[in-house]
Image 1 (cartoon, one colour):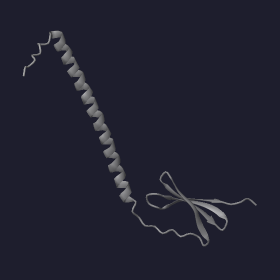
Image 2 (image 1 turned 120 degrees about the vertical axis):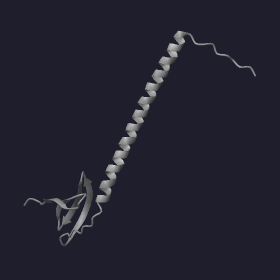
Image 3 (image 1 turned 180 degrees about the vertical axis):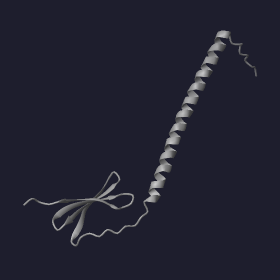
Length: 112
């Protein structure tokens, strides 16, 4: 087998090779920095949300008036929203989603 011998690069070619290496190094470091930033952001979100999930393990019993029925439920931000029908009157009750403590009550009645 014959070996090919590459000629020595000229000074201009050597300067060009050095410039390309430097540009590749800058691009590689920038990419590594971007990947590290994404991984840190994902890790932060995972650890931050993990703590709030375990803190919500509470048990609450809420009593409703006699004859009341739950029409709808929903989530609005950090609130749990219940729509109740109490003898023909619509009422909305809100609770804090983390502690399940009552946060507010809104009654809708017909005008006479």
